[in-house]
Amino acid sequence: MKNIFLSLISCVFFLFSLESFAQGETFLADRHAQKGVNCVACHAETPPQQAVPTEKCQSCHGDFEAMKEKTKNLSPNPHYTHMGDQPCGECHNAHKPSVNMCGQCHKINMNVK
Ligand code: HEC
Ligand code: HEC
Ligand code: HEC
Ligand code: HEC
Image 1 (spheres, rainbow, N blue to C red):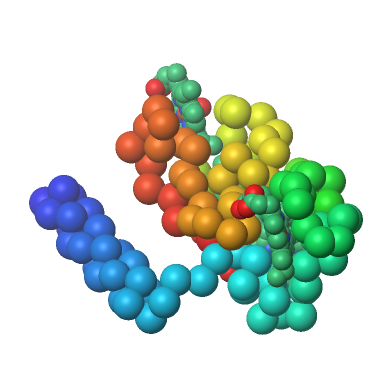
Image 2 (image 1 turned 90 degrees about the horizontal axis):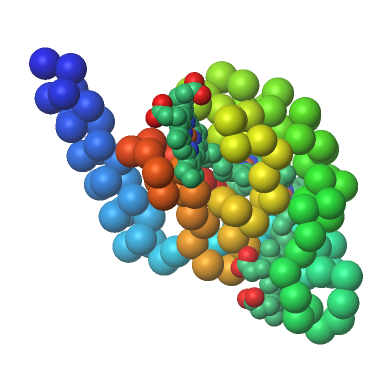
């Protein structure tokens, strides 16, 4: 019974992801632009050439402790795991789809934005 319920939930999520795909995929950098965070707010160099260090993300979003607090109601909390403090780029990508690094080893569904 529990399995049927979980399958239904996954189906709903699958349909949602198809829908967002149909609407045209946006990446994290696009969503920052929508909030007024432009290229130079993340990239030190002009024009941008390299990845953005974790410290830069933290200058706006706060340290590991702050991120842990922000997502404390999620299970598992993606920002507080046995993997310890991870660089943001292990999961979040800015110009391509983000990745669920936990999925390398576990069947954990995480929707990394
Ligand atoms: C100049 C400040 C700034 C920097 C630097 C920055 N962000 Fe953000 N970020 C924001 C703002 C503002 C928002 C939108 C408001 C919010 O959700 O907090 C946001 C939103 C997000 C979101 C939520 C996106 C969504 O769709 O809900 C994630 C995830 C995120 N940032 C990750 C990162 C990562 C990873 C980096 C480093 C590569 C980074 N941010 C660098 C300001 C910043
Ligand atoms: C192990 C993967 C992973 C790592 C590493 C990671 N994140 Fe996340 N992050 C996630 C997931 C999954 C979510 C989506 C949580 C949800 O469902 O709302 C998220 C959500 C966020 C959000 C939106 C939170 C909210 O509720 O508005 C921000 C901001 C964010 N991450 C910033 C960061 C920053 C900054 C770093 C590096 C210090 C980082 N993340 C490292 C997986 C990760
Ligand atoms: C939220 C922070 C953030 C913002 C805003 C952002 N970038 Fe990036 N950028 C990154 C990260 C992180 C990488 C590393 C690759 C990735 O995650 O996709 C990157 C990589 C790049 C690269 C190197 C090539 C690559 O894909 O590795 C270029 C070029 C680039 N960005 C251009 C831009 C331009 C132009 C803008 C403004 C329209 C912009 N970026 C806005 C975080 C950001
Ligand atoms: C390199 C492989 C690997 C990666 C990547 C990984 N784990 Fe694990 N994880 C393990 C192993 C090995 C164990 C211990 C054996 C077990 O219980 O399966 C474990 C145990 C766990 C447990 C149960 C034990 C506990 O700590 O209470 C959870 C929950 C968990 N991992 C979550 C995560 C999350 C969330 C991520 C992503 C941030 C992640 N793991 C990434 C290998 C990994």
